Image (cartoon, rainbow, N blue to C red; front, side, top):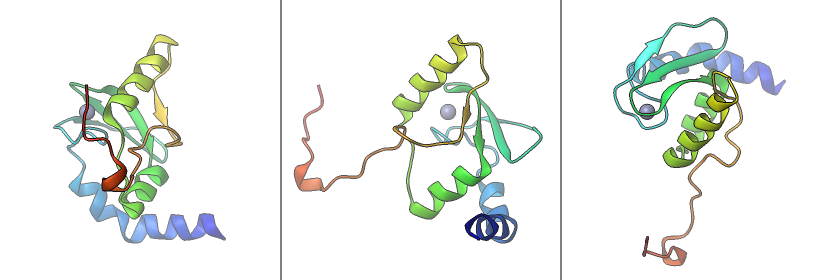
Length: 111
Ligand SMILES: [Zn+2]
């Protein structure tokens, strides 16, 4: 089963990765406070991004694929959730990742 593979890798490999990033924001990689929480979550209180949770599984998947968050998009999403009265919990990266495109097709100009 796919889920079991993820869980076993979580216990084997990922612990080290999680230690490395323990004191950093998982979105902007700045220094952030780790908040202890129950369940398969990492919770952070970042001075810039604010407080949020990300599922362990998603962190693993992102590391595996070498993907990173689109910081501005994530912050916008977090703000939206907060105005709705929730502690933002990122489970699905949909729409929140930096889209990797070919360098030649990337417009260099940013206004
Ligand atoms: Zn941050």
